[in-house]
Image 1: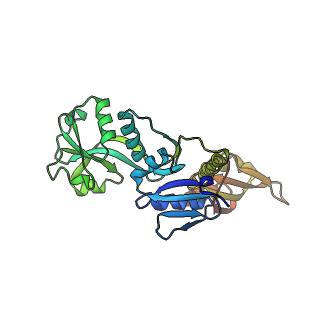
Image 2 (image 1 turned 45 degrees about the horizontal axis):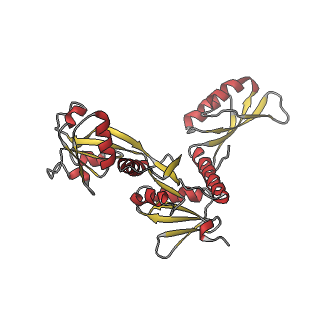
Image 3 (image 1 turned 135 degrees about the vertical axis):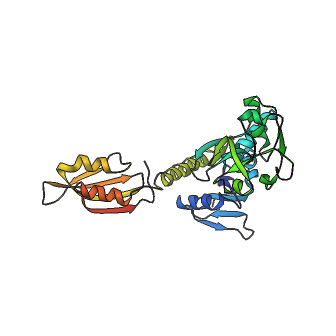
Length: 300
């Protein structure tokens, strides 16, 4: 039986926009999970991997302090903690090891719609409400603008209406929240997505091998999210044209068809969306017996 010291611990956001995506992704990597009664812990039944469900702001700290070996968290949170540590003269004890390509958003400066904004110079001598003080302060330093970051937790977008700030600096996804509060996006500080971070503490060979195995599985799952497996029959004389029409395919498999010399079977993994128009174009080029299947997993 595995001891707690032998098991990999992954910190995951307890509630929020990354929670369901993170757990679903790990389950698609083959991890079978059982939730504890207090709903703060997920136990890996078939692999020595456990999930701790915590606040997203706490994840870099738990990884940095070696309480957890890995963490799944937004890059915006990682950067805020990293820059705060550097500003305090401390070195971050975690490293980013994988990008997960979900949870996309951006940290941006926004202001009231009627603001006479003429570039970053308009930020000079203003107050900017944000919960990302370290990132904002570093950004202002880089562009050489004197402005005052005002820490504001919760609904940052209401700060200008309350007279607490001239601008805000907050996460933006669709922009609908800004529009609903009469704000417009002005400057982007960073583009964010969910990432995997790992402790800087050396892991045992067994635990590092398990981490590498999980990262390989993550890569395999993410590679095929939009991928489809296409099978079709094609005239030999049209093979070049048909291969060119296969979206995102690198090297399709071409096999002879039994009983005929002028047609072949073509199998290909297409790493782009396969639309009806794609199939219609393939058929027009001479393809027949087209079959499109989803791809669940793939290892390079």
